[in-house]
Length: 164
Image (cartoon, rainbow, N blue to C red; front, top):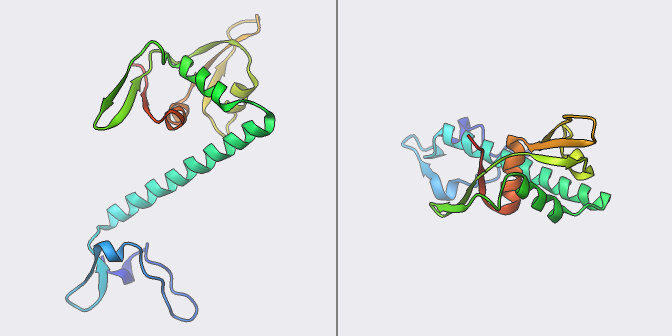
């Protein structure tokens, strides 16, 4: 793709100067007509941009959640251990495939008294958990959403697969 048509090329400033593209050293080339560009397809550039945006969103959300826990006086490690128990970490075994650590969740629920940290994670801001109230005895069911399983996987450095 030629740089003058690339949506991902650095913008030209008021003086007419343009920063160098970060991909040019690795993938840059000069085309037959003398214009510079890269050998990366537009779809690949767009995919890399989406993955970068997703990674930045996950980092910011995790950072915000950790600081919110700290401000409320909750222990993040205690919550992570409870979430691991929620998915049955002790019962199901971890395995490695292609250098990555995996775990297949045995279950995905927590039945007990209401917890402030779990309630906070149920908010739409994070959406990591869902809560259902089965009866009037004061106990509730918590379960991790798909985003919650990804969050727990990032915290424990493993990929957690949902039960079938």
